[in-house]
Structures are given as structure tokens and as C-alpha cells.
Length: 305
Image (cartoon, rainbow, N blue to C red; front, side, top):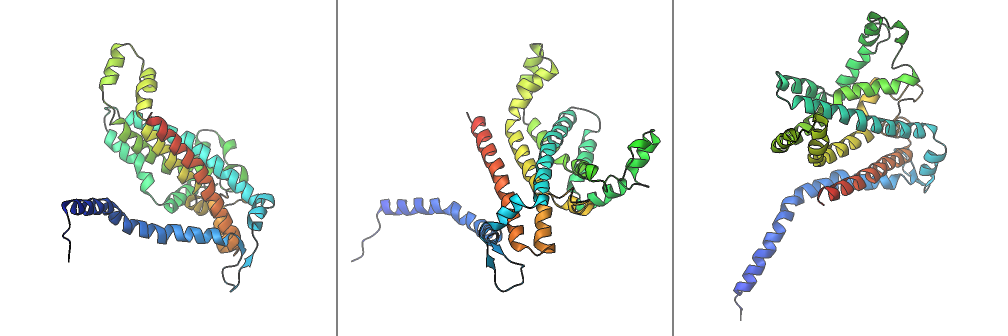
């Protein structure tokens, strides 16, 4: 004898179906994430415990030796880590600072602001290889724009082979990356600025507040959530920088522009040290997570207090 479902049972089934519906929509994206990102990352972590050239049938288990060699014996790894930290610091200070200044300027009602927004954002959509090729020509020791400009204004003593000298190569590449990347924080800050109402500024003017006071007590606090996104994306981009460095210097001269991503590439694909390259990639992921996750958690928690 069949028992007909009660109204309560039907309601419970509808609630279950309603609760499962979001997960069904997430399932395709979650499946792609697991296949394309999570599983390869897990396998890379597994390979970091082996010595393997990528071709041999057998992998030799070496435990933590790959990590120990990187930390204790690999001077290029230390240089690459230092360069990554310098690049990140420069990006956080200069790229975000210039992006914010441009956003504040182009948020005002000035003639041609739409054109200027496009001009400053345009380099960001270019390929890193295109930017690298253009700036490598500009840094040419004999015919490049930079040295020609210095000669024109009477600073011949400042001319040099910018990409061929270990002391200047990294900073020269960073200037090119700065030119390309400053448009992204500018656009994000512009979006944040346009959500701020005008009423607080009008009240501040009536109270006799100066422009810098309006910025510090009104604009900056109301841009906090935008700033969290900008800082997080800038840190991630600076930690995984690769293409512009590889295209402009290939990590040279004398390994002076190596970063973790480029050294990982060299170890994996040029020297066939799959285990060492995998260990570097795990270091890169670990450093990024250690920096990004606490930062986003702390700043997001503060913004909701």
C-alpha cells in the first residue's frame, strides 16, 4: 500500500532542491577548476619531492632535498626571490600611487578626460611581448630614445646600456612594466571614486576643509574596499611576473633580472630539473598565499566592522 506524500514532504523536497540549485550551477566551473588548476597543482607539488628530467621512466625520490638545495645552495634562487620582493614593493608604491593620482585627476571635470583615460589604459591591454619589444628598442644603447633624450638635454654622462648592465637592468624592465600596468589600478580607482556621493565633499567645503583633508577623511576611507582589490591584484601580478622580463632580458645579464617565475621556467624546461622547478613553483604559491590571504581577510574584516 502506497502512502501519498504529505504537504510537509513536498515542502521539504522543494527546500532541498532549492538548496542544491546553486551547487548545480557551480558544478561546471568547479569541475573545470579541479581539472585545470587543482589537480595539476597537486601533481606539481608531488613532483617537487623527486629528481626527474621529464623523460626518464623512473623518478628518484629525494624528499625535501630540492627545497634544501634551493634555500642553501642556489644563489640564483635567492637573487630571484629578492627581485620578486623588490618588484612587489615597487608595484605597491609606484604603480598603485601613480594609478591613484591619475584616477583623482581624471575624475575631475577636465576637457578631454575620456581621451586621457583611454591613453593611460591602452598599454595595459597590450601583450607583454609587444611592450618588451618597444621598450627594448627605446633602451638601445646607440639609437634608443632614452639615450638620445639624455644626450639632447645635456646628460650624456647618464647614457648607458640599460639592459646590459646588471645594476640597471631590473629597474629598466620595471619602468616598462610600470608604463604598461598603471592603467589597471587607475581604472579600478576611477570606478571606486565614481561611487562616492558629492554630499560629504560639499559639507567639507562648507566646514572649511582643505583638499588634502577632504581626500584623507572622505575619499580614502570610502575607497578602502577598492584599495583592497587593487593591492591584492597588484601583489599577485607582481609575484607572477614573467613575460616582460623574459622578452626583454631573458633573466640576464648575469642572472640579475631573474624572478621566481623565470627561474622556474629555466629549471624546468631548459635544465630539465622538473623537481627543482616544481619546488620553485610551490615556493611561489606559498609566498603568494601567505601574503594575500591574511591581507584580504584582515582588510575585509576591518571594512565590515
